[in-house]
Length: 427
Image (spheres, rainbow, N blue to C red):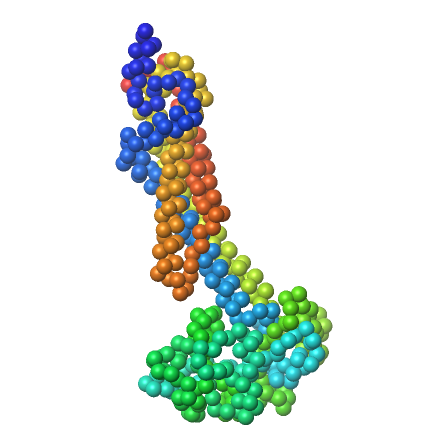
């Protein structure tokens, strides 16, 4: 009778059965948390902020990686770029030249390459309407638009006839055309470039790409040489080029085309075959993409690690409040042990309470993180669209559960090891 009376007088939460099933333990844990709403919320806040930070930052990192990948792939496919100089060895690019003859040699000698397009770049002041500003000017051939996958919004790109005749024509980037002509159709209108009257023959689609094409001006390559910039080479009778873009026929032939191009350039520039004396650099689009992916992945991991620190701090809060709970419920623990509860029953009860608190916080943080990613995608869709991957969700929720388990073990063990007689005498 005395034992029955003690059981009846136990606190409502967790004290009326010596041994509990898992779901019964979960139900009692929820009741315990509900009975101290403010304290529970403040304890979960660390977990919520931690999971929210992890999900938000990883989704932003994933979105940035996808945006960069799309932009790099958008500048063309199977692309190789030949540039003067060797940045990795600090060789001054201005002391090395690539010429139109180099471009023609590549066109003749590397059959894996489908398109070869030399370009020459300089800066000049453009004047049109009320706008007068310095812009970057690219002298290009007809094939440049194909290799760089440029889209024409109005008019046309530079043609072979325009280039051969060195006509005074320009193609404007979308942002620059809008800045000069507003909503008017610029095709057939005239702007002045480095003091020369130029007829607008085309406007590019807005791209938002890495090379700031939206604010660039394109002229025929020969127009750039003969009318705007000169550009005679110092080592031959040819013209200098700022770079040579190569489009390889297939992705499988990119490496072979790169090796053949490097060997050809070494022979033309009388350089050693081991590459130590190279005065040029051949970049492949794949290596550029790999570099960007490495950088963005590193940043994502770094940001995720910083967010993980706040999750760790939240776990310390869980342990602190569980220790307080063990102290407050010492007599309850003693009564349960007195009526037959074993150590594992007490251990499981407190571990489940810590896990329930951490997982609940993790779910709320996950929801907030998803909402944050959606809001960023909505307001900044032009620049980035955060991506919440299943891996990020599993990582955040799994890590929050692991934090609850890790930081709940000590309070649970402390509760399980209480001496029932001393616990019953506790006031």
